[in-house]
Image (cartoon, one colour):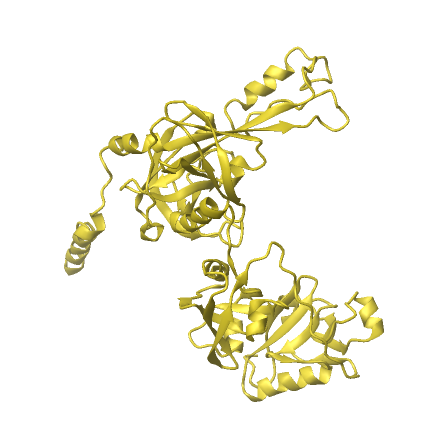
Length: 500
């Protein structure tokens, strides 16, 4: 009976109402007032460009195509295939002209009514010969392209008209929390201004589109043609720019992505004023700090920061003394929680500014002052520094499953190593060994062990033996292979001090 009473009590506790703070933001009864306020500032973007005839058919232009996933896709296909002779489906019988104008549709929004400044996605207008902005009343205005930034997929346009324009303000995307209501407005499938509502589903999404991925995810319906349109909070402020969707069908399945307004504002301001974006540049190749790498480097607090795999020759980091094996923990006062956040943090800083960088080196934190450069279009990779190897016999690294040897002319030719390559080459990797688990391959070159350079197999053995004497369970190798330099942690199996 006591147990039954306890179950009833638990049921009442589970059904108890949430605390007031948890239900403070309720669904609005209608979005109509917000939609009326915002729709005049959201525009459609129409672009056109010359499309060349297909190779081998100088007299035949390409067939007009509806966007993939469009409800009109089947109509276009059937229309151009009707009454064609067998084998000629899809080709116009009487081409009228050697080239035509291809058109695409997207969305945008006005941020400055007096100056006529419009923001959209770069991919909406990329390659266009002509850009037109279509207002909410269907007025079409030829637009001037002020600047684009492909790295963040942003573009800024300017229109001039005697008509009064409406504009919308920027909001603070950092204040948008998971679960907050948001409204998306755009031009899906070219149908014109459409309003959809949903919530912020997630933040900080990396969808592998570039170094600066930090998307807001939303379940507000976003479809083809919504690109470049605004994502609003309930105060009518732009907190995101709708850019991409995840969909196997081409239509919305409730997973859309928007560029955060706090990132977009800085880019838009530079494009508006100067037509291009200047980003801070550190000049490092970096990789993720795993738990094993953190253990090998004796980092308190576990894996965090960005591990420098290479400081590019001639770059700001190398000039300041940052080197391979350093772990960048803080950059100009901002904590680097994980590797992928470092490029965004660096890019947000002023070119030419001297900033403090806190790194983990030799078991302790050090502060290094770096004068930032400007991110080049194609940063050159640094070459490996020269170091003369000493002759030595091939040896087996017990417990690691690796057989290593000094770099000889024969091995240099066999593994296609660079003439200036220095270090110790892996000639054999045993199956089911720690080396095999880390995908090491014959031809990979060990250049460092525990952040100390090595040039002979004997030096590699000495570094490993020292770690075992210190009861260290992980050795950190710097490996140069086909993909460049990376750091690889290896468990020291079956030997003194190893977990075994």
